[in-house]
Length: 122
Length: 110
Image 1: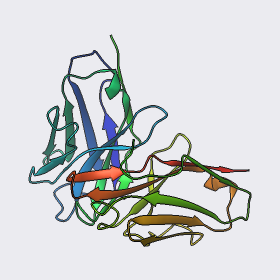
Image 2 (image 1 turned 180 degrees about the horizontal axis):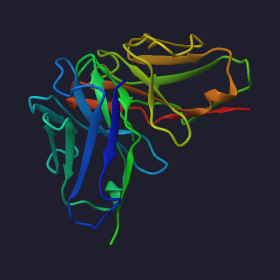
Image 3 (image 1 turned 90 degrees about the vertical axis):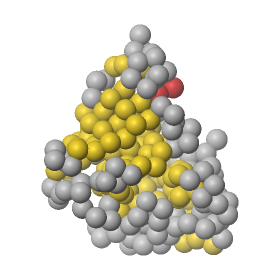
Image 4 (image 1 turned 90 degrees about the horizontal axis):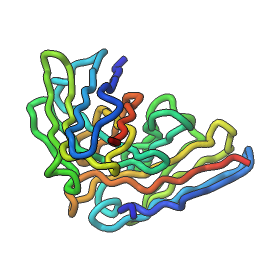
């Protein structure tokens, strides 16, 4: 059974860079047909797609975050990485990783990790 | 302001039928499949319906969905207390070239 687990620093200072890891177990991220995604949810608010990545490194990012977001993968370690630069309080959120099944346009996200809370504060 | 529009709240009593709407445009739900997610309190979202009306294995058949044009609907029949959660619709947006979500609907079981 596929399991995803996000990890990273719970607190990041304004203007610094947020770096998160998603460890995937129970299946290979290098499997064809699956994209992998990052989604975030500010406290008490809705979901926001951050971006999607294929195991080859091909990425799609939210236009509103594109200039600050870097997505990458390490297939040897079965890990996904999210890097978000120049963070502000507006980047405070619960960050999730998930598998994108069914294609990056027509597909859906399943399963999801449990999420990791990142707070941006000095 | 979310790209897909959902009512912020909905409610019903046990056993009732509840409908949650999701309205978009031709660049998203009007053209691309809509997926629905359920987020129980304090938990990560979970896929409830994919590809407009497909229920993954393990999802009770009390949950169903449909789409007409750019409007989609999630229907919960025989409402149960454990259905109290936030529900989100999502689709790909061809203009934004990315995934968009509805703002979410908080379902209360009275």
